[in-house]
Length: 344
Image (cartoon, helix red, strand yellow):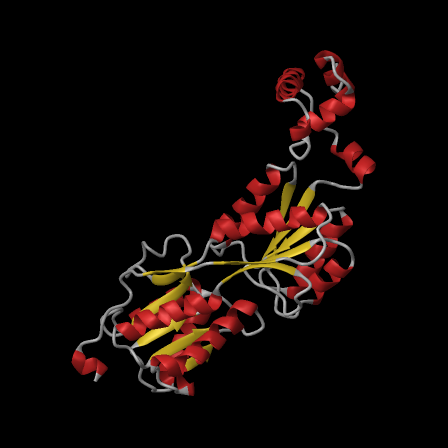
């Protein structure tokens, strides 16, 4: 026989309270309005009876699904799982659930995912996949869906975002290399249609003269994607140009790993011949050889911040909010000081 579904009224009857009290006691966002002893009794009874909220009924009653779409550009990139955990844990504490989508860096796929998620009644979107000018994200926001971009941002300031202090990160990395005697520093820049790629390159160009870094356009290679393959290709491009360099600043760790692989194939030692710096401090870069010097971003915290901003927007917060998180330089074995003759 099919067991009868336990309802909110069943829990209320067993607890000796009104059904509305049960509803408030079981909702993380409203339980503070209920006496703590009543909340505990309601929770214990609901668990004993096996009560499960009816999501469909809740959605019809409130016009909310309590689901949030989270879209990342590359699920294989180790920077994103900590971010997703931060989003998910924050949402769960408020009774919301995350649905994950992956674009593989394809804007058409991002459009399909956003369209599909909104058609299913999501309450908001966390987007780590956006380009600087992203019609999909802007249209979703204009259409009434709360949107927060994370790790990247749009050029449009009316869309909320959580990013990092890119200029500070680049300056710390370059100052470290210059302090080791490096002046001919090559750059593997990220895709310029993303805010991270554009801002990190702009920061390099802005600080180059102040720090005494060589002004040589041959030392800048542009990656078409944040991938190991593009890091290898860009390193090969730099070598073909025959412009000498003693260090490389890479716009993210995956580009740096690709550059290290290409250097290794040519028997160019790191850091003996060339120092390499990455960006993000993604998991395991301390375990590669040599361990990567990199700029550490707050991967988990940016997810927490994005979810918090989104929840405030769902509750009616007005203007867009922009969180900017601090970074730090983590010095490991991929950088070394030049000998006096090398710096010469």
